[in-house]
Image (cartoon, rainbow over all chains, first blue to last red):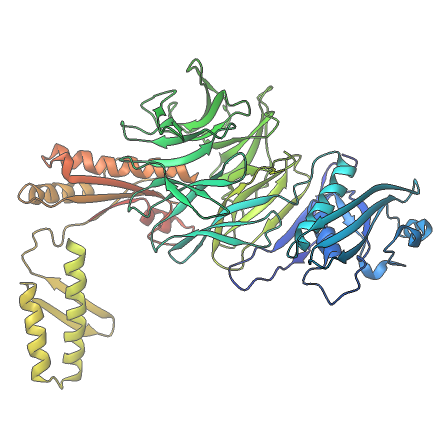
Length: 434
Length: 170
């Protein structure tokens, strides 16, 4: 990454509001970015039709700003608004101290499909560095924008962008629970499943191909694990055991779910083969064992256990059943998730009654807190790492309300996604799907 | 079991209290009330004062008046003395009937959700085990944990948390 380092408190305070008539949308509030973000200009895209429902350039600028790594130039400061390469005058952009310029020209064919010719220029090197044509269907302006953001981000940081990915989360208003799926920026939130009153939904987990969600529902008056295909809404009940049926986590090969059951006594981690419904129990123990998550190679599972008296994180190697304790600092470490490169586990850490998100290096065992202490944000939980490993989402409370927040794994940038309605929690970041 | 008849009584008590307040009761209304009273084979008294309605239940439900919510200390699943005495009374009654019992365990909001699910179950199991020790058949008792998902009281205060660490019997 080009510009990293220390946190600059409340650099930008920007609110981007997305509108939708149906459900609560998330709005983004950026708390801080890196102290030397890359200046970039996203020139308004060329378009010669009736007004469009979405402003692609604005979405790209918002994506890049939210990442904390970019400082987009405001439109009113731009000296020109080039649509084509021939209209680019490097001097105009050097004056603004912009490092990169993004331009594009949008057209629509008779079938209603959009085509964006998009280019990016390195202002100081005075050369074009990206040139791409993107074609997409009639309702895909946001998809096109996020695709552009991904390309820009990847060029500058050498890390794949996550702007085109989705997130799932649980939303609650009064006693009704909804499983939601939205774009990573909180826009286009869509309800996947809604409970009857007083029947909680929790613990969403994506299948590795991003097509299915596993989650817990109380619709049978007891907890049960369901699988739902996101595109079709088709659901299948996977478990109906006495006691706990919880904490589903999809295996990297997509064939199995690690789950928590207490049918044989105390809560244990079980592995459920999805096709055959056969169960195995890799590490039975009389203590509470729960909150499983697979290691990247699928050969192990990290989980929470209070076998030592207080909740700590352990790892079981499935082939041998050998269990190893991973966390030793403090008296509460729980709900681990493994980063996509396998080098970090993130989890909830309690210190002096305050709950933080912590990250621990899987090789060195060194851990650090990713979220800061504050009077208002004392309940950080449910961390989920973005598929590019650069960012994580978590749930917290803000002014008594459940909200989602994000922090980069280097903790350089942060932003909040407060909901306008109800409480939101338990984010689950979907994998890359193509 | 207890809750339903209590609700019914409360409704009737409110109605009665209102009528007393108005002091213009029609006989047909009283007749209706009487029928309802008969159907629940109980009697009730209601007063509608400035502060609300109080109900005293003298119907034959032997479990009436015995606590059905049991509270726990932070991170604990040990039954408190009040819970034990209430549960002893419940057990004595349950041994004389065939009712089934559902125990719903809950946790406060602090800590991770699925771990709290396990804590809620531990609490429900502690209540179940006590009833079983008192002679109630285990097969008649269902335990369900809701973890922190269904707080009795909203908010992030010690008083809210203490109301939420509970097992509800119904």
